[in-house]
Length: 314
Ligand code: AMP
Image 1 (cartoon, rainbow, N blue to C red):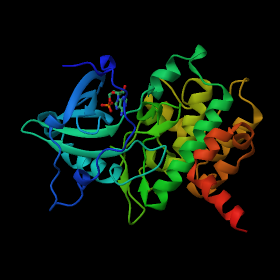
Image 2 (image 1 turned 90 degrees about the vertical axis):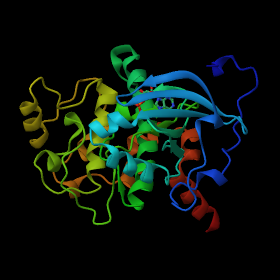
Image 3 (image 1 turned 180 degrees about the vertical axis):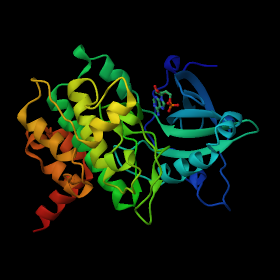
Image 4 (image 1 turned 135 degrees about the vertical axis):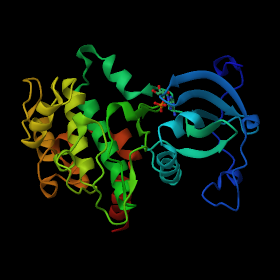
């Protein structure tokens, strides 16, 4: 296999040829095969297969190719979940949501053609920081990007339900990319009772097995903001039943270094009642976010782009 790092030709940023990517339409079957790609170095190992750097031969477009073994998916009864993940992620177009360009399969494997996020996993980046936590300005910018991306999802009735550092990647410019839609759900009825997600990030309504809606993503944003600033999630305990209790009583404590502005946004997201949580638009306008939001990040957020457009038309 050729290592793409050693290929001297410049990587292209031209879009991947469109005509082959009509995957949602059964009548126009996916036309990609492994032959279309040069495979490069492994980018990482997942539970069901590996991810490789790859380049589409004709366009030279660089992607990440996720290879999943059908046998392992079947053993874990995850075919349905994967279908849902593909169906949802391949339709989303937002700068902070990892693009899924398409998929194909052979006898034994399923291949997902994904946007390449060159700075890798958010979790590893967090762990590599001094004290394993980020500075407040970086976190505020991540929060703005995630709030914007979730606003886009919720408007399309997509709830992510599993926002956590392990499911986030970082693009070439340091932008955050929501990557894993394995637990997400298309919610025409907006209320589901499935227990899913990671324990530390579970909202009270999910812990208690009540129905939930898109506002679980507001809770998980609050947990993520805390973990980014403190280095661990707020209700972490060795015993899971203690974590459950602390989640349901919203037993929130801050270390001294967390500023009042950060405490304010986290406390307003971690509300027991979903209707009391700060909404996504209010996250974008929150004083602490506004204080740290860089003009570069702001200029790329669709919400502010549309606001600026309205302003210029008035
Ligand atoms: P996953 O199976 O999605 O957990 O992916 C395994 C690992 O591969 C991740 O932890 C990342 O380090 C890496 N990876 C997955 N997808 C991408 C991507 N689109 N761009 C860059 N690295 C990726």
